[in-house]
Image (cartoon, rainbow, N blue to C red; front, side, top):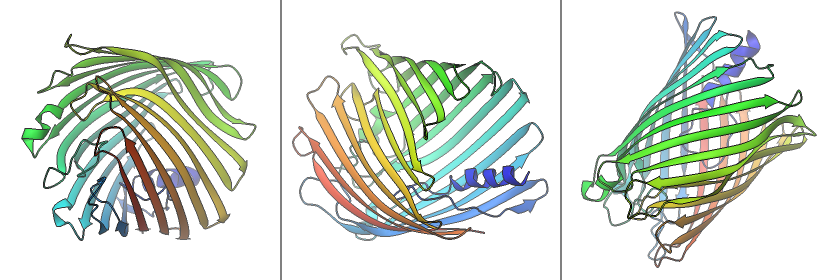
Length: 393
C-alpha cells in the first residue's frame, strides 16, 4: 500500500506544471486527508526572459515573463476504482507587453475502474479555458491581433481494455470527443471552431514475456462550424512494443493514413505514417530517448491540412541523486496542404534541475528556437531563459 501511495503521488505531481522550460522531475506532494479522500495542493513559479515574444522575423520585441501555476488534486479510491480531480490555473505576465498577459484554467477528471483481472475502463474529461500566444504559428495566432487568442476546449475520452496484463492477447477500444471554440477576435477565429470525434482499436499480442506485436486502427471525424475543411482521417498501424530488452524500452508503429475532405474542391491526401518512441538507459542514472512521428494534422491557416513530421532526442542525466541535467533537440517539419508553404523548426533545450527536498524543486532552462519558412515573413528565431520553482506540502 505504501508503494502504491508513492506512485499515486508521482502521478499527481506530474500534473503540476502546465508549461515548463524543460522536463523537470516530479516532486512528491504530501496529502491532506479529507474524509476518505486526499487533497494534494502544489504551486509552480516560473520567471525569465524571452527575446522574441511575438515570434517575428523582424522588429523583435523582448520581455521578462512570469508564470504562476497553482494546482489542486483531489483523489479518492475504493478497491476497484480510483478517481482524481485536478484543477490548475496559470497566470502569465509579460512585463513589457501587458496586452499579452493571460489566465488559463484546466479542470480534468479521471476515473480508473477495474471490473476484474480481465476488464478495465479508463475515463477522462476536461474543461480548458486556454490561449494561443500572438505570433505562435503552430497555434495560428498572428501579431495582427492586439492580444492572445482565447478558446474553450471541452473533451472526453474513454478506453475499455479486455485481457489481463499477463494474457497472451489484449484488446483496447478507444472513443473520444472534443469541442473547441474561440471566444475573441471572432472575425479571425470563427473559421477555426470545430468538433472532433475519435474511435480506435488496439490489439496487442504477446510474443515473449516482454515483447508484443501491436495492431492499431483509428478514425477521426472533424467538423468545422464555419469552414469547408470537414474531413475524416483514418490510420492503420502495425508495430511492436518491448520492455527492458538490452536496457531499452520502446515502441515502433508503421502504417498508412488517409484524410478525406467532404468538400470536393479540396484534395484528399494519403501516405505512410509512423510513431516511434525508444528509451535507452546505459546507466541507471542516465537515459536517452528518441522519438519520431508523422501525421496529417489540422491547419491553423487557410490551408487544408498540415503534413507534420517530427524527430526528437532527449538526454536526462543524474549527476547526483538530487541534480539532473536535461539536453534535447527537436526538428519539426510542417508541409501545408494545398499550398507551397513549408516550415522547418529546430528547437534546442538545455536544463538543470535540483531536487532540494521531497517537496521542493529548482530548475533553470534555456531554449533556442529557429524556425525557417519559405513563406515570406514567417521565419523567426527566439531565445528563452526560464527559472522554475516547484513546491508542495
